[in-house]
Amino acid sequence: MVARTWNIASTVTLRGGGVPMPILGLGVWQTPPGAETRNAVLAALRAGYRLVDTARAYRNEEDVGAAIRESGLPREEVFVTTKLWNSDHGYDSTLRACDESIRRLGVDRLDLYLVHWPVEGLRHETWRAMEKILADGKARAVGVSNYTIRHLDELLARAKVAPAVNQVEFSPFLYQRALLDHCRRHGIQLEAYGPLVRAHRMDDPTLQRVAGKHGRTPAQVLVRWCIEHEVVPIPKSVHEERIRENADVFGFTLDAEDLAALDALDEGYRTSWDPTNAP
Image (cartoon, rainbow, N blue to C red; front, side):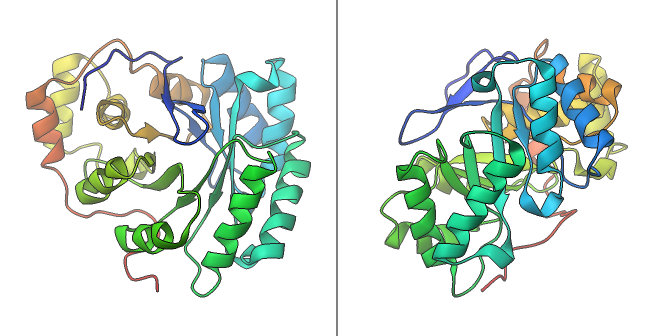
């Protein structure tokens, strides 16, 4: 991994069309639809975020779109991700679901469309539809979420177009090193949801020590740890001060000693669903 200097405007380049994806985003999972989502997205865009991650299942796509329009930012400056829900798998259903998400968001196309979960029996037809969505220009990039190495290998063996992104839960306490390495080998960008571990580990002594060393908060260290691994974190918050705090991670770096200590925190700790045994 080649060290590089990051800032809030930095991007990673996705495979295929060379689409630039911001290195940091706002996640809106479990953010209630309505004003709370709109205000969180507006706060993030004011703070310099340029990636917003939603999903059909979150029921707040309309509010994400409304906030982007209200921000006054040009549409092309905001990277919008949404996801196909489990009940929409299948070829025709996937195409319809994509159109409906585009309509709810009020955009002409998506920047990234993800398969939210590897649904058994239907995911091959679903991916065929994702390839058509990409070819038709309805999404600039397509990818998956919650895919393990096994699910990725199954997809790669049959796909005409490989996924550009795999979004999974990822933090020092769930350091999926083998999955990260596998994605790198196949040119798949890893994206991290739950990077703050739902605040369940903020009092960990190692995390506290590294945060103190740099004069930063544990949350900032967790976000920066992802970036140091060239993984795109999408921390979630509805509080403007926390949204700003989570973005203020570009004025320090983690050295090799810090990274080794944080990497060693892995305990397989999940705060969300576990796809390991998904058929």
